[in-house]
Image: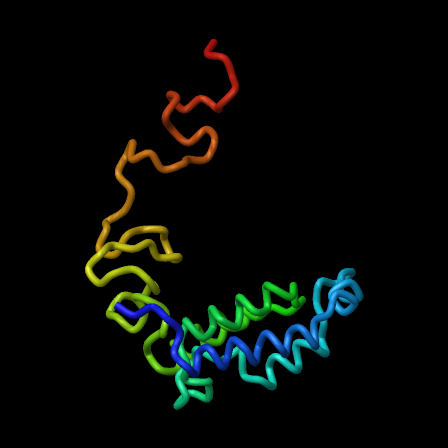
Length: 162
């Protein structure tokens, strides 16, 4: 198994290192410290296509993969660039998955509505907090209950029996 970067990936890494060394100097990072964000640098990062690098080309992204995104994140991290690359990349992948019917994240695009959850494995839904096909919580199942909601003979927590 060859785990070396391809020539294109090495070129991307070299290009991004030079870009971030130039654009995210120590002075630029310190100037962005009050907000933790540099809008001018972010515009340049977006113009390079890094925020959508892992989104498929047919959806307007870069068509690369998560290895290339990881390379970009490593270069960004080395320079402490104050931009939300990972957050934007994940959001863009989510939007792409909703418009294309499948995420490029591992486990996405499957029949499972939860990215990373293998098909057939029960998952929690936001609507009721129940697993798919689950009729609901059983008494004494260990799920948290509101204070005074059963478990102590109907008494509120903290009150001595009396």
